[in-house]
Amino acid sequence: MTAPTRAAARHTGGLLEAPGQWRGPLGLGVATVALGIVLSVWPEATLRVLAVVVAIQLLATGLITVVTALATPAVDSAVRVLLMVSGIIAVIVGLVCLRAPQQTVALLGLILGLWWTFKGLIEMVRAVSGTVTTARGATFGLGLVTTAAGAFVLLDPQLSFTILLVVVEVWLFAFGFLTIAAALTERSEERRTFSG
Image (cartoon, rainbow, N blue to C red; front, side):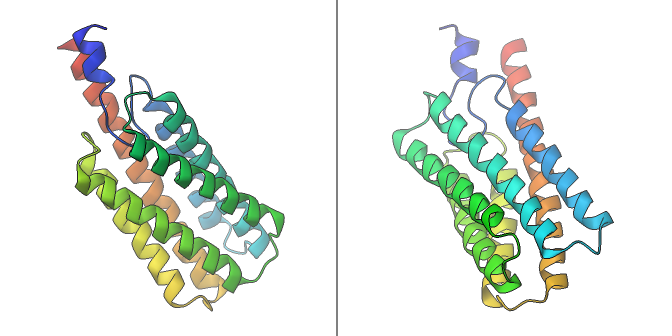
């Protein structure tokens, strides 16, 4: 393995692991922002539409996380397990949202609140523990925003549909833009590694 390849395949502990793997998170970020736009321009969205949009985002996040954990040999085994569990839970939560999209606002809020809190705390721990070598600020910001959204929804699961819709929209935009920022940071770092 050449020096640039070793440097680019370094351990980062998250969605961005080896050369070219910034593309999946970039696509996820763009798709997440697009889902936020769909909810923003469709203010009369129903609970069913909200559940389906959230399910799509969770399924995509879960699948990308699982594939990344499996495909990146440079990841520490503890981080790999944490990523696998996180990805599998995201897929399960996404499937639950698809299975019963007409569920109550309180149930959808509880499911989202639990997931966001769990995922946000994982991202903040990754950023602080040093398992992320690039985009640490974006990773921590992503975790902070996700945990805050989860805590907000968990503290009042009886939110009205309108408030839940706004919280989901804000989270989709924040998650999408921070994921795009992390992916572009990784791409820039990868280019510097291979050109230098």
